[in-house]
Length: 148
Image (tube, rainbow, N blue to C red; front, side, top):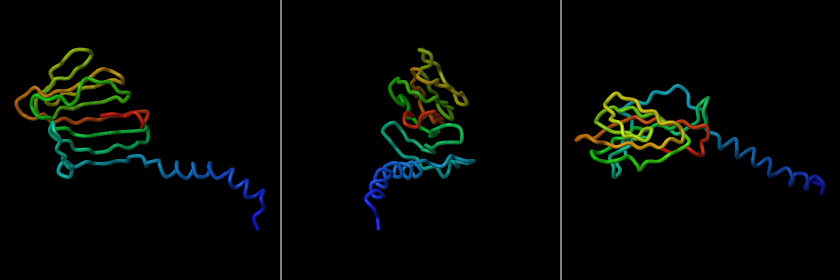
C-alpha cells in the first residue's frame, strides 16, 4: 500500500528523474574514427548548386562537429557576409572562388585552405566559369550555436 507520504515524495522526485532520462536519451554518441566515401555521399540540389552533408555530431573533444561539401554554381555566393561562434575551415577542391577574410576579398584557388575564426565576418563566392566544389568543416564548443 502506498502511503500519502511516499506518493508525495515520488511526485517531488519525478521531474528530476524525467529530466535525467531525457538528458541521457538526448545526448548523441561521440563521433569515432570514420571514413566518408565520395561515391556514397548524397548530393542534394539547391538553388545555388548542391550540398553533401556528412555529419553534425559531437566528438570526444567538442560539442559539435559539422562537415559538408558544397558545389556552388558560377557567379554565386554561398550566403551574405555573416558571423557565427563556430570556427570553420574551407578547402577548395575545384573551381575559382573569393573569400571575405579580415575585411578584404581574397582569391582562392584549388587546394587552398581558408580559416574563418570565431565571430569573424566572412563570406565565400564562386568567381570562375565552372562550378566550385569545397569542403567545409565547422566545430563549436556550443552545439546550440553552430551555423553553416
